[in-house]
Image 1 (cartoon, one colour):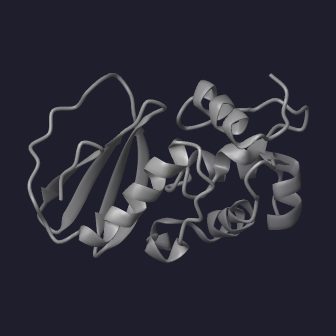
Image 2: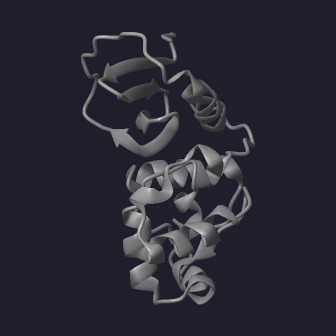
Length: 170
């Protein structure tokens, strides 16, 4: 399963995909037809040796990510995510963040109020979000309205929030 948009790299029973988009280069690690990790690839191109494998069920996730980065309002199905990589507290935070609609933002303190813990523990859980973009942690901002940190970099977070029409301060 190779296309100009994404490349499959097979390693035994785990698959690695790379999605190249003008906004970001994204990697996906999957196993058993479920996404285990979404990560941002920085620093230019990666040399890959594409092969075919049994992870075709992930093609819908890749297509959805590509459409999302193109600016479409794309619903992601959490059933394709392997949440076993998350801690219990992190799962609570991610559940709250999954409910933030496109064009909206919540502060770290608001997420903490809904999930428990404090704003810093929420920030820590989101810094380790294994599924950025799919679980929209870019929609969580600081209490002063500024974007705050992001795995993909603050510039990408700002571009995503602007693309979605969310209100925040620069």
